[in-house]
Length: 310
Image 1 (cartoon, rainbow, N blue to C red):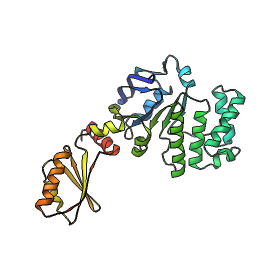
Image 2 (cartoon, rainbow, N blue to C red):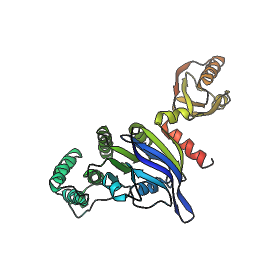
Image 3 (tube, helix red, strand yellow):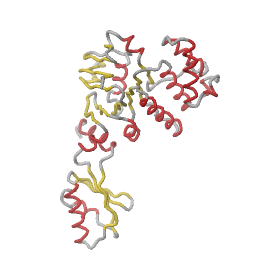
Image 4 (tube, rainbow, N blue to C red):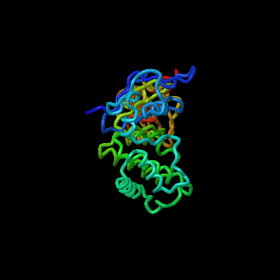
């Protein structure tokens, strides 16, 4: 599989602060690549470098083989961008916003019109095409901005928190469109704080914290690698003493969740045997007993806490 984005030893400093600290990774052509991290981790700075808005202090990056410093124009021509802080021109109609952006990308007039009609229809905005954007809701504006990012039919789409703060319907439309675009071959570079969104959409995920890459892998493999986050969920026919449960060997943590109890362990087989032994010795009947893989949110929190020295 070809490489869409290649990053080697990328570094960016702002005074004494190192926003991006010697990071390296590759994004394969045709994948949805998630870029996750807490606020201030370096996500937006990385996107601003890759989209040729700012220059790195050190390192190198290429977009479909185009060096972002030596060939920024060629790199920009094949990408679509939805930045975190973005807006359409509110004194223009939705249609005129698309015509303007299409012209800036050098899309011929006839193609601009054809693509604009198709995009606005897909995002449910065609009936509002002649309305000024100032009257649009936040969700409508975000859908229009995505239309603007797609008017040049980009090979790579950069999305920085595209569903943040949106209503459920608008967020669902955008997620469905991301999958549809990817199915037709578009490479997507996505930052998000929504762990469930990343889990459902991304083929691979990189977690960044304090400017450094903490981990890169598929969501499932990240969960499997996170020892100590494996858990068992159980319920009993009578109330049990949580302090006693916490003393069971190989149980690292116990948490009550409604009528169920969650046991965290690094050895699920041993923990299952110990929990059943406890139930037998205390005359308890086990109602439910399930092993659970860690959620992506739990993996994220563990990795970022490790990097924070917690």
